Structure formats: structure tokens, C-alpha cells
Amino acid sequence: MLTAGGNAVDAAIAATATQGVVAPETCGVGGDLFALVHRPGWDEPRALNASGRAGSNADPSALRDLEVIPRGNPLSVTVPGCVDGWSALSADLGLLSLSECIVPAIEHASEGFEVSTEQAGAFFDQASFYAGQQAVREFYPGEAPVVRGDVVKRPALAATLHAVAEGGRDAFYLGDPAQDIVKELGGLITHDDLARSHADWVTPISCSVGDMFAWTIPPNSQGYLGPATLAVFEMLEPPSDPADPDWWHLLIEAYRSMAWERDDLVADPDHAPLPVHLLLDPARLGRAADTIDRATTGVWPRRMGYESSTAYMCIVDDEGLAVSIIQSNFEGTGSAFGAGTSGFLLHNRGSGFSLTPGHPNEIQPGKRPLHTLSPTLWTHDREPKWVIGTRGGSVQPQLVAQVAARAILAGMTIEEAQTAPRWVVREFGPFSEARLLVEPGIAGSTLSDLRSRGHLIEEVSDRQPGWGPVSMISIDGNDRRTHPDPRVDTTSAIVF
Image 1 (cartoon, rainbow, N blue to C red):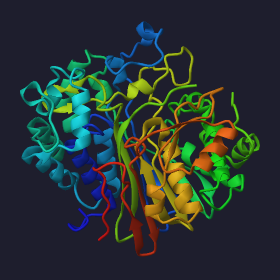
Image 2: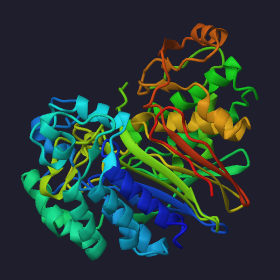
Image 3: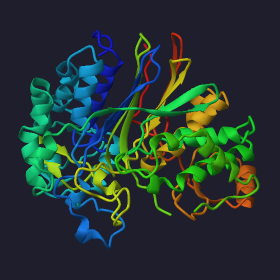
């Protein structure tokens, strides 16, 4: 797209559209999308929330005894916002037509693509879940799941994308895909729900970290947690050496000091209990920093994170236009439901809702759920400097904070920051313990020190594909630097 005269926005649309074709285990037109876009000289990035809402007939009464909405329940599906997101990005900021941007995705769907290791594993694991699901029949030739190297063609999805290329968002939300969605979900989502636009330009939120501002999407996204963690971490005046046990302890505790109340704060912005501007308020961040003990782990007034499949991408063009864009099916390949004759699966973002009566994030018709998608974009003197994001569900802010801390605060090269071992805190709600999973490569003395401070550590044997891939671009005038995350074989980076 860039060499064809397009800009970073056009490239982002083309890349995410193609990713949804060749890697439906991460994202697709049945999912949602968020984006941050910044041009040199702008006062702040433009932020797009293209996350869909619960259907008009959403009624959680039969599920009140459950903790979360299961993937196999129709309530797990909200209106897919992805196509609305492409349309808004293209109309407002693109140089090429939406049709031109979708052409590569159509070609891949029509001509076929090779199955990756990750994709083969996903559809092998989901074989019983998707038995008889027409939307993914191409991934079960002869009723057996595909294996690495198989070539898959998706003609039904190609036809859907071709219709969008010709007719825009209406071809998706008013056409055959809409018919499929309403039928598949038994009317839980109505035609009126689909006709409503699900892409909103919103005001981004930010806080200062070092000499930059870190920008992200406000709720219903959990994106504030990454910048908040780094701001609190910086307030603690950590050592300059990322190998120092104090660095590890303070960064982990900075995250935990903010994340414990995420589930009570992140909801549809019309229902969120805390004004958006207060999430990254310096005084609030300072109070969190004051609660952290340098000698031991803290307990804040628990919830398991989700395994999530998501596609994050960042693009910077030669004019300096920077895009941080993310889209997702949520858990694995998404819900059990698909727009069968239209060739795509539906996400299960409705599983992010609460089933607790009266909760700010309680599922209700027309509401957006808590979203784990957490893109970031960093500026200095109104110029874009870094674009960083990742997949990872609930742990996305943790991964962004770790890599950004190393690259931005410690001055590591991108390659060093990408390859350094990572940690994940799975439980971070009220009264949770500092229970960590850590990748190999951390010094034994560091682990012993952390354990002595109260961290409960489980060491995993290999690098974890789900703890990334983190994608990032640094921008210094005309100098652009990037490096792919080594944790998966489906990530790449290119500078030209």
C-alpha cells in the first residue's frame, strides 16, 4: 500500500484485513478494532473505538450462576466493529480507497495461503468445538484439521470482502453477512443493531513517562494500565539496570497497584464509575506509588486472565504518519458461532461483560464490554516517537510495560528489549497475591531475591508465544527502527 501511493492508514487497513484472512485464529471481520493515529504537529493522536455492542435481545438472567459468559453461548457475541473501523479510518485519514486496501485480502482468500504452526495448533485444539461449523469448513478438509504447510482457500470470505470493497460498510452490516449473523444468533443481535455505526472517534488519554507522553484508548479499553504502570514505576525511581532485582520488583508492583481495580473501573464509557480523565491523573498514580513497599509484595483491595488471540500492528510512513492498530477475536478463534455462508467466525467479546447485577460492566443491550485491546502511541513535542502494542488478552498492559520500560526508560535496543525474558501476573484483582509466571533466562539470584520479597514464582520452560508478539517501531526523524518478537514464527518487521 505504501509503494502504491497510500499512507500508513491504508497500510494498516490492508494488513489487518489480510491478517483476518490468513490467520483467523487471531482476528477477522467478525471481531473488533481499535486504533491510534498521529501525524507530526498534531496536538494529540486521533483515537478510534470500533468495538461493537451487545444485541438488543441480550438477557443474562439464565447465566447468573456463572462467573463469565461461555464462548459457546450466543451472549458471548457482540456486534463486530471491525468493518466499521476500516470504513472510518479510510474515509477520514486514508489516501487510497477502502476497495484498494482490501484487494490483497481478497487475493489471499481466493488464491490460498499456507497454514502456519500456530494456526494448525489452534484448529487442531478447536476441532470438537467447531464440528459442523460452516464458517471454518476449509480448515477441516475431509473432517481432519489442517496441518502446517497445507494450502487453504476461503472463497466465501473472499466474496464477503469483495462485497465490502464494492459496497462499503453497508454491504456487511445490511447485506448477506448481517443476515447470517442474525440467523446464527437466533435474533439476539437484530438488523437494527447491525445497522448502527460501531466506530467512534474518541478522545485519547495519556500520561507522561520520561520526556514523552504515552497515549492510549480510554475505556471500554483497559489500555490505560500500560502507561499507568510505567508512570508509577518511574515515580519509584527504579535502578537504571533492568537486571537489578529492584527493577523487577518495582515494575511488577507498579502494575499490581493499578490493575487490582481494573474490573470495577473499565466498562462502557456511559456506565464507567470513574471519569476517564482520572484514570491517568498524576495524583492518583502518585497515591498508587505510595502504597508500594520496596521490601515486600503488597495486597490491594482475584481474577484469572484470559488467553486471547489478537493481531496488533504498527505502521509509520515516510511522512511520519504513525498508526497503532489492533483487532481481535478474543479467546482463541472467538465464539462458537460463525456467519456460515459469509465465511467468517464471530468473536466472543461479550465474555468481557460482568454477570453481576448492578455492576458497571454488567451485560445490557447496547453496551460495550470491557475490552482487553491496549494499543499505545508515544509522542515527544507533538511528534510520534514510539508505537507499541501486543496481543495477550488481560496481560497486554504487562507486556507493553515491560518492553517499553526496557526500550524507553533503560535505553536498550529494540532487539534487546524484545528478547529479554518476560513475566506475567495472571491474578491481579482485589486481595490477590504476587503470583508470577516467568520465562527462562532470569538470573537465579534475581529469582531468589524476588521470592524473598514475597513473589510466588513459577518458571516456565520455554519462551511463551502468548506473551507477545510485542510489535514496536521507534521514530527519530527519518530514522525508523524495529525488530520482530522471537516468540512466534508469524511475526515480521520491515523497514524500506
